[in-house]
Length: 160
Figure 1: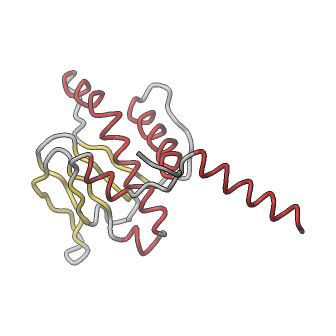
Figure 2: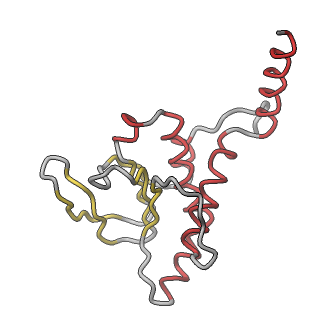
């Protein structure tokens, strides 16, 4: 039990959920930061040396983060991506299993860079991505801690 509010450690969350974290280039463009697999099968990754994609055996619960995420973004964004993938595992695993029962091909979810906040009301995957994107940052910094930080900021501005 926590005695005081504190930021979440996403690596510990991955471990506690029984997920396996690996670093792999996910696309040529680097527009996918993270990806989680819901069943065993073949994943497709990008080789920057060979400039082509290649298949790799993956297992349910495998989480892949593109190492370029560290170079192109900051650690906070990478941590957010990790929690985002954990949200998919915790909240969306059953929905993905149901989609597969309906013969829809859906083995993984990817956290993709987008400039649009548009969510198709008819696309369940869009909604899952939206939900994970909204929940991840809120989970990383608890409300009590955020309120405390905001009070300090307001106090500092009142002193100016």
